[in-house]
Amino acid sequence: MGCGTIRVGGLFGVASAAAVIPAYLAGSPERPKNPTEAHDYFDRAASFLTANGTLPLLHLLFGLVFLGVLVSVLRSAAGPTGAVYIALLGGAVFLALTAAGLAAEVAIPAAIVRFNDVTVGDYSQPFLGLAVWLYHYSHVGSAALIFATAYIVWRTGVLPKRSAALAVLGVPPLLHTWIGLPGAYSMVVWIGLTGLLMLAIPPVVQVESIGA
Image (tube, rainbow, N blue to C red):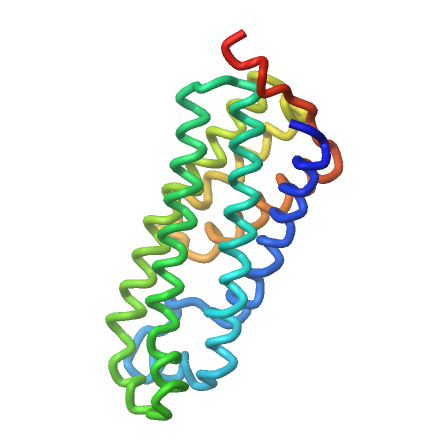
């Protein structure tokens, strides 16, 4: 795999991290604690739909490209090992459940905008609860991706070995059920930093070396 492809993957990683920032600025489904707060959470439905619905589509799309290139780099360096498949499945679980969580979170504002009926907000609590737990489960996958990547980097040196220390960023996502947003922030930071590493210091790995 050439430097150009790896740099493109890194660029998409940085872009994926940047694209989700507006969603975090819009708020978190964990914050509303009563029906009034849940209703107020969607107060500006149109802008909420853009921040938590439209822009995160780019986060997911760019994240898929980043994950594909990263896993290819890891597999080229380590071969078809268990850690590579853990990274692949962890990344896939993270992206899939994040997409489901975003869909649950934007269902109410999407209905308000489409049908011009603010009373739909009265039914928001189950959707917010669903989104919270989908995000909790998604970060089991993100933690697996981070730890597996760090292990392969430490074992093979496919990226600078010191970057294996980024494994520490996998601890908050693993604790997302209890600490909430800091776990999500940690994952976004990891995606951005790993993307920067791939962009600035791309490894040169040969796919042909697998099984040699």
